[in-house]
Length: 168
Image (cartoon, rainbow, N blue to C red; front, side):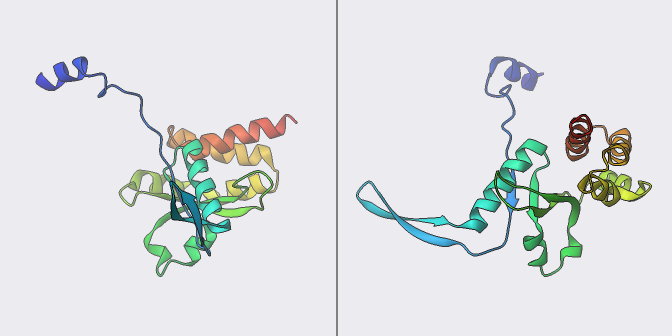
């Protein structure tokens, strides 16, 4: 009862959710010196950092938490220990090349893992069909994911993309 009263009185507790995302990529980073306030500050720069930042932005749009590039997966000592769902080769930013991207999801999320394994043809097949421009079969696969997992953001994203691209 006391918590309920506090929630009603405190606008901070009822504030909108802050969306955050993480992007992981493996590559070289350059350190540059930038004058800030009379001092030289070291700031990271380079293609690897830019890709990681763009993956983080994509993860916010997909609302899936953590996106990992293929380069980062290949750099893992034991990638099989992680729950990785391939999202295909995506373009992180305008004018950039495509990067193989994976969603890293919780090891505690057995429901998601079980549904993805049980899909006829599998998640990977739906992503493959999407990459080939086969919008209808890809959309059917993503619809099956949403039937089992109605709140799955990546499936919702891909289904929306299939619908938009099939009408072009």
